[in-house]
Length: 267
Ligand code: DGL
Image 1 (cartoon, rainbow, N blue to C red):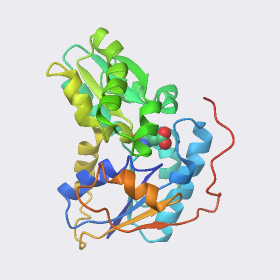
Image 2 (image 1 turned 90 degrees about the vertical axis):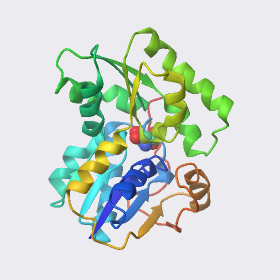
Image 3 (image 1 turned 60 degrees about the vertical axis):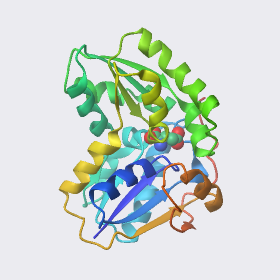
Image 4 (image 1 turned 60 degrees about the horizontal axis):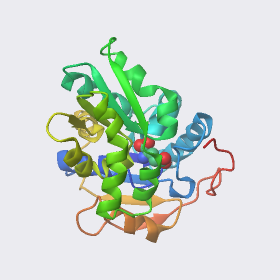
């Protein structure tokens, strides 16, 4: 039984990594829609249609469950996806919101995410679903998301960008920080280093993997297949930061809606 994962690029590999840790025998097919990266500068309608195309591909190759390993796509299209397919579909936003609420003592929670996720208010809704009085402070980390996808993670530059994202949140007194983009989770150790011990950093990948394990799909042979819509070599290079060792073969595919970057965006 195979599980499918979909993201706009390499970020969802952070979820794949946690799933493999918890379910080493699960067969996984991963789709990175890298030709249309970034999702975080597109409209919710565009991202929803990209997501459904990606899931159609995964359904066609026979996955029996799927994880939307992308916060932006979870915010935009999780509900539509659940209406369209009969197999279980997990998202990452609820998986970030729940442990964030469990971890907070003061009720002030910081979220770093893409521009589209911030604008969607999806984290506010999910967190307040557990803690109505929560104060949620957002920052868009879109620029850093782009650096991660490009595989440009030179430590002092990444450190500066992380610090710049964090400073207003630390000043505002958050005690929990949610990495609300799977691309930002690629550099979670840098976030952890800069927040110190007073702030708990939540990577939704862990909770997502626990939810996947509960589906009981771990009875395959631990095969991983990776598909991308963009340049496979560029993907392989950037994936090195998430994968320990060589990532498996990366195959290029074409989605019916076209693989070129969408014209319309709003940043
Ligand atoms: N990985 C995606 C997320 O979790 C965002 C990257 C993008 O902007 O495409 O939101």
